Image (tube, rainbow, N blue to C red; front, top):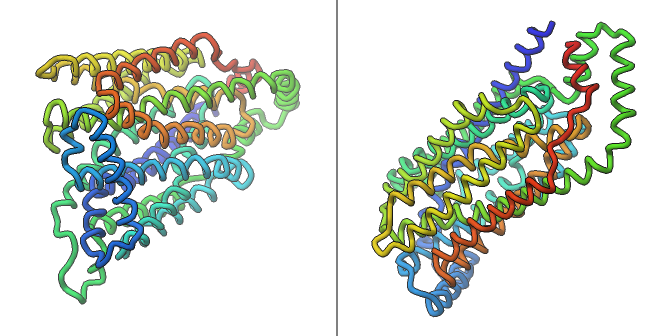
Length: 478
């Protein structure tokens, strides 16, 4: 029976991985197209009394203010082009802010109604926003589509929740590493697909074409096809996992009294630890917020640094980001999945290693800006630090949150994701302000020191979740 349950768990985990990979590919296709899409919407406007013109006007004023108070940046000197890129970044922050709002509700709904129906409902929302994008002839309609996208994206947290449902403490983080691999592969391949579509004609000139007024309609159509395939795949292959552990225990124990006694003992032992579990959850949420606040901010300014300091072309920037994504994928597949997951202490150890690597990488980048001609070697060493952090920190933290207890897993992972998305929405705004007002070197020194301090606080004040003996004995009986 043990081998049967293990095979079933592995099958569900692989289903989640395939579906999430399709989802992230669909999500990342639009990323390199955002500035040119905004440029296309601006070009077809006939007057300046529009939402897009108003937003670009305010961004332009902010850019001019920054230029007047700091050393001129090669990126900011692009003028209107820089305004479009910055507006694209603000849309990304809006997406994260919406995720912060909706993530707790998605988690609670998954605990009440089941993982499968909530995930399929999120897929319908993803399909809806992509259809609107396909026919969006104005910026207002496109913005509405992005709002729906932010409120509908629950695939990542539900994937973590489902994996937590079907894995035991010994294999939890090994399964969750697949989420990180899907992210790394998707964020490496997806923008490349989007870049391909950016080379196609912006829109059809033939009035009979139903996609006449949709910039990059071919990209939107391809993204829609991926989502439809993913939805059909989930509908056919994914089982409900809300009560997976309970059903597995009943099946393997044959309904004997030992199982019932173990369950009763588990509930009794859980009561005294309820307060400590809540405290641990709050600390992990706070850690997630502060870490992503600095990490996402430094990550966002990296393209500005390579443009200003090294005059990287779009192709060179793509190779740097691709290197980070590929190395992160390899690390998760070869190192992280093989060397973590035997206990919650292993997860904590991997988080510390990832944070220290991130801090060292940011220090390398800060130091490379101090060299007059710039040091690409230090830049690539910094990229290695980013890759190690991407491969370890967030995935291992998700595993730790899921190991706190087996109750309301969706709620806990939803609250955890919400805290991280607040940091992800605010971090780029903070980092850009420091970068342009106080200089790139100071910005990355602050980032390095902050992540190092966070790692020390994590070591001192965030204990590894304790896996109760009843949970272990139940798994052994299976």
